[in-house]
Image 1 (cartoon, rainbow, N blue to C red):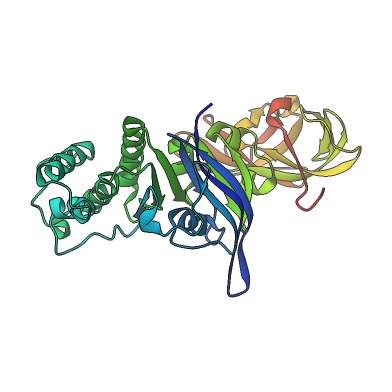
Image 2 (image 1 turned 90 degrees about the vertical axis):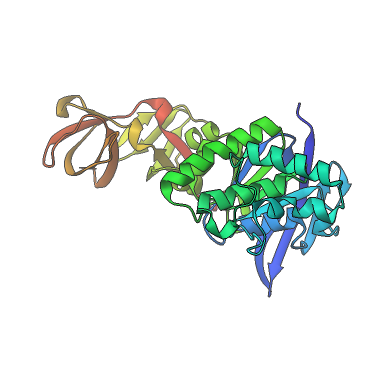
Length: 348
């Protein structure tokens, strides 16, 4: 099993009497790319700042390889941070920005030059040493910020929405670049984002947060295919979430009929949330459908069509590579493994 690097123990944080984090417990492994994902105000950036030493928790502990660093100042921790705004020094060139932390440590000049050269090659900026940072594009400035953080050889790199200021094309390029850098260096990345696609693309582990609490921890595949509650299902990708009743193990009722499913362990006739991904609903002939409905709208999304099908008082979102025009009478089929049953929020 991989070595544990960071552990958060019952971390709570309040600002002006308002609870921002509610007893967060989390461990982060060596060489792991872990992403804190959630909507604005969910506590993900506060969690990152507590790990980095920029905030102290109201209660709880931060452990680094078993050592309590809760009250250790940021500059003494073996972590570095990359912010969305880059925080580069405008009066310094690229070389001077990257070398800054090494100069503070008073390393030998030849050592500094060698380390900066290696970092420039790592972030594909060889030859940019004497450039003014103000002359660089947003993506290039972000690479400089990453190089400046990595040159100090931190054991953990914290990244607070570092790609948020970039355009879509550049953001996607940098996602792949960051993942590649992390794998090549073999260090731990803790990444904050509200972008679900970004988290699914880059992460080994995703921590979904909402209202100061961890909702689910898992691999991207687990989080997408097996969401633990309706919030996770709705936040990670598109979902159809409808009311249902769990009649017994492996049998649920929703949309006016009974469906076999693969879930168990609920009380008889328990009210539940039923979650079905749009791509898991199959359009068939009207006669062959478990559900029958009418196509209300169609949007072409590039790789598939998104259709809204009205059936049994529910507007189902359906993704398919085959388009059925508005007004068509269609059948909908759903296979048991594609029906995900969740406890209602607030139920025990």
